[in-house]
Image (cartoon, rainbow, N blue to C red; front, top):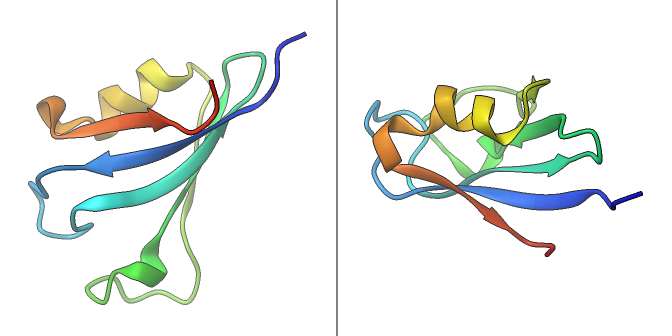
Length: 81
Protein backbone atom coordinates (compact mmCIF):
# COMPACT_ATOMS: atom_id res chain seq x y z
CA UNK A 1 0.00 0.00 0.00
CA UNK A 2 1.37 3.40 -0.90
CA UNK A 3 1.55 6.36 1.44
CA UNK A 4 -0.37 9.61 1.55
CA UNK A 5 1.50 12.31 -0.40
CA UNK A 6 1.45 15.99 0.51
CA UNK A 7 1.52 18.81 -2.01
CA UNK A 8 1.51 22.58 -2.40
CA UNK A 9 -0.63 24.27 -5.01
CA UNK A 10 1.59 26.95 -6.50
CA UNK A 11 0.28 29.81 -8.63
CA UNK A 12 2.74 31.78 -10.77
CA UNK A 13 0.14 34.23 -12.12
CA UNK A 14 -3.16 35.17 -10.48
CA UNK A 15 -5.53 35.31 -13.43
CA UNK A 16 -8.58 36.18 -11.29
CA UNK A 17 -6.86 38.61 -8.93
CA UNK A 18 -8.29 36.76 -5.90
CA UNK A 19 -5.94 34.07 -4.65
CA UNK A 20 -2.56 35.70 -5.17
CA UNK A 21 0.65 33.98 -6.22
CA UNK A 22 3.04 31.54 -4.61
CA UNK A 23 1.69 28.71 -2.46
CA UNK A 24 -2.06 29.31 -2.43
CA UNK A 25 -3.20 25.94 -1.05
CA UNK A 26 -1.91 22.74 0.54
CA UNK A 27 -3.24 19.25 0.12
CA UNK A 28 -2.89 15.52 0.28
CA UNK A 29 -3.30 12.69 -2.20
CA UNK A 30 -4.56 9.45 -0.68
CA UNK A 31 -3.44 6.01 -1.91
CA UNK A 32 -6.68 5.79 -3.92
CA UNK A 33 -5.73 8.96 -5.83
CA UNK A 34 -8.43 11.05 -4.10
CA UNK A 35 -7.18 14.55 -3.23
CA UNK A 36 -8.21 17.01 -0.52
CA UNK A 37 -6.96 20.57 -0.54
CA UNK A 38 -7.17 23.55 1.82
CA UNK A 39 -6.85 27.12 0.54
CA UNK A 40 -4.48 29.35 2.49
CA UNK A 41 -6.97 32.17 2.86
CA UNK A 42 -5.27 33.40 6.02
CA UNK A 43 -2.28 34.37 3.87
CA UNK A 44 -4.43 36.52 1.57
CA UNK A 45 -5.80 39.83 2.82
CA UNK A 46 -8.09 40.05 -0.24
CA UNK A 47 -10.13 37.01 0.83
CA UNK A 48 -12.45 37.84 3.71
CA UNK A 49 -13.26 34.63 5.55
CA UNK A 50 -12.90 33.23 9.02
CA UNK A 51 -11.65 29.85 7.88
CA UNK A 52 -9.81 28.32 4.97
CA UNK A 53 -11.89 26.66 2.29
CA UNK A 54 -11.63 22.94 1.64
CA UNK A 55 -12.03 21.22 -1.70
CA UNK A 56 -11.93 17.55 -2.67
CA UNK A 57 -11.23 15.87 -5.99
CA UNK A 58 -12.31 12.22 -6.33
CA UNK A 59 -10.60 12.12 -9.74
CA UNK A 60 -7.29 13.12 -8.19
CA UNK A 61 -4.67 15.63 -9.22
CA UNK A 62 -5.84 15.65 -12.84
CA UNK A 63 -9.26 16.93 -11.73
CA UNK A 64 -7.68 19.48 -9.41
CA UNK A 65 -5.50 20.86 -12.20
CA UNK A 66 -8.42 20.90 -14.63
CA UNK A 67 -10.28 23.21 -12.23
CA UNK A 68 -7.43 25.31 -10.83
CA UNK A 69 -4.57 24.99 -13.34
CA UNK A 70 -5.43 28.16 -15.25
CA UNK A 71 -3.59 27.06 -18.37
CA UNK A 72 -0.35 26.15 -16.62
CA UNK A 73 -0.33 29.18 -14.30
CA UNK A 74 -0.92 26.88 -11.31
CA UNK A 75 0.94 23.66 -10.62
CA UNK A 76 1.15 20.94 -8.01
CA UNK A 77 4.50 20.68 -6.26
CA UNK A 78 4.91 17.41 -4.38
CA UNK A 79 6.41 17.62 -0.90
CA UNK A 80 6.66 13.84 -0.55
CA UNK A 81 8.14 11.59 -3.24
